[in-house]
Amino acid sequence: MKRYTTFLLVLILPFTIYGQQDLTADELFQKARTTAFEQKDYSASIALTKQALEKAPDYTDISVFLGRLYTWNNDQEAARKIFEGLEKKGVKDEDYFIAYASLEYWNDQNTKASEIINKGLDYHPQSEALWLLKVKVCYSDKNYQEAEKANAALLSINPKNTEARALGIKINEFTSKNAVGIIYNYSHFDKQFDNDWHILSLSYKRVTPIGSVILRGNYANKFAESGTQIELEAYPRLSKTFYLYVGGGYSNDVGIFPKYRTGVSLNASLPHSFEAEIGYRQLYFSDNIWMYTASVGKYYKNFWFNLRTYLTPDRKNISQSYTGTVRYYLKSAENYLGFQIGTGISPEEYRNNLLENETFKLKTFKIGAEYNFSIYRNLFSLGTMYYNQEYRPNEKGSQFDITFGYTRKF
Image (cartoon, rainbow, N blue to C red):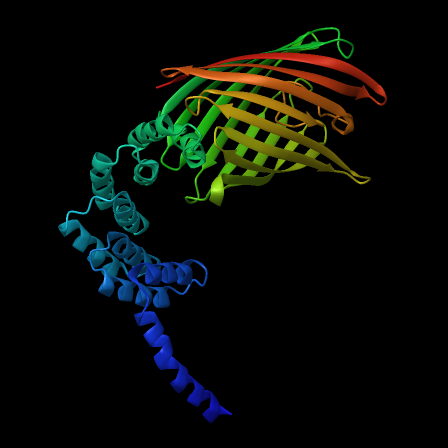
């Protein structure tokens, strides 16, 4: 059997080689692409691409593809040799600059990558791919001001570029080292309480090399009584993909606020402009309340979609909260229209609900909208929310919220 198989291979091989030699450069190029993308066999694809170049040595697209193949095959030296040869020939093709700059960026040679990108943009100023690569290189180099400018240039070319929108949100966190903010929330109840609620929050945010830190003080007037709370939150970065949320708060005015609150979440920036979070929130009034949260988000063109849940287990069952959020971004990460709809009570909505005792188990429907806009380094927000809330078993009331916010970045 082995002799028969060997005989067939010897018989067929010359015809196979002859068949490939008889193919045109374009046919070999197409076969090389199929071998690379569908079979993931880069070595075989390199061999086919070299055959194509023997037939058409000045075919730039084939040379660029060979450079990409060497890059994907982790042969940096061979890839650079290809691209440097094209550079000497004075090649000005957009794909050449993208492929060469990508090689240097993926291998942490950001200075060289920037040089190639800037040269490419001189010839192709409307290239979305080059602008996007420039944003990534500047962001990787922690040159956030240049990253912001490049991202703005890209969005001016295509406001619906999904990846640029997602990057813009990340970059926005680092463009100013400091920010001070004030938020006022007004709540009116038709049945549940006789007095309206007023909550005022003052915050200071500092961007550090490892992530943002926020110190916040809250003042509330509820049930015609006043109380204060202090909070500290941090967003340490673990890697390019992961970062943490870590938060805690304390109040001596239990009932107005929980005495203690803590929270930790692991956040991930995923491929294809997805993001995810999983973590917990803990509140302590006279007893501990533990809530577990998870969310998934997706950027798509000018939109951001997010679905979040809070699960609160006890001995009998698990109370559930679900909230869907949609944002439509306008000219930048700080300018958007938002819409929210959901059920259940969220511990993040400290201004709205008492989670003490059994109230977190009662049924709630909520719907609202917000508008955020910026003028230079001044950020403004306006939001409204309607709640139809079960405040006692089988008894419901309405709650109307209006929120105003102002932040100054410097």
